[in-house]
View (cartoon, each protein chain N blue to C red):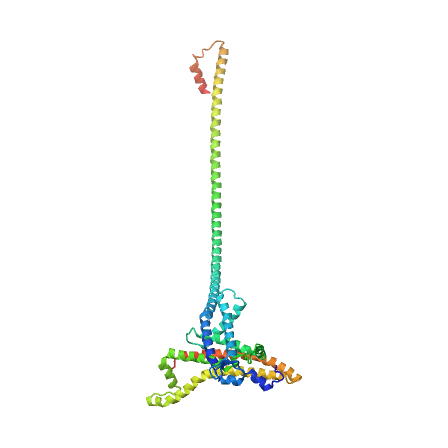
Length: 287
Length: 156
């Protein structure tokens, strides 16, 4: 909880600041001690907390599933294998339902996205003070525990998906086909002059359409998780207000946490499904 | 919220994780699932086959029983026929034997009668000779009268 010297706004901004590693204006590489320093570091800096937690969760996911995969038997499955098989079959069903092409990448990609994003979102259910407090005890100034509340993380994933979409669009349809898709629709014409007339309009619309995919994908996840985190922080601020407000905040926190279980799963599922759908669109030939 | 190189780091991690998942996690899990599906399908097929085989076996068993019953009835009929045949044969045989015995007995009796007659004749002739000699008080020459005696004996 906030110390005596902290105000509510200080508490909130403290909780929303990443642990950033980068180069200061004077040329030294270091961990930022203040929000201003972090801002000063510019693009070439790393959010150690987001990246660390995200990679740790990813490795945990891979380790867990690899353990099961290594000793997976066709016989009677044990408890963990049962769970893993349930997840895998769920993902497999989702991919079969939305992806019509043939690509061995899509199902493992969907599994990784779903479980990884779910685990990152799940960090939201850990009490918001644990991360910063643990960091404080180990001498760090900031620590954001939930990687998916960091736009860098969601953009990183969405842009990776976008890169795959571009790659498969060009691989399946060829450069010409891909460019044709960008310029020949939605307005279509038979004669060449009309085609040329529609070309800039089509290009504009399709480019917006294309660019909106990674942006909406990343901002949806980021927005939902950031808002959820924000509400947890605001509830936590209420604890310090008074006994009555504090106990009410307790109730709110439980309610919001329960509701959040739904949100974190749903967001992971949406991220996965949209990835599958985008890749499916990349695999489909238009005329 | 400023965008930084964290994005790139996350992208690299993302591709590495997906590649790992694609190489080492998804295939063995899918393989295990497929294998189990196949095992279950095979088991069901085997059960179906077993059921069909059992039905065929039952039918066969019923047929065998029916045939065995038929065979047994035939054998019994045959045996009865044979038994009556044997009984008839024995009857015939016994009758023949009896006739044979009776005939033999009759022949013996005839023989005995003849012998007795023979003896009787000899005795009567001897008696006649001794009686006549007594009456004549003189020795009758048996040799001289043998011819006569023989003719007497034949008349008896």
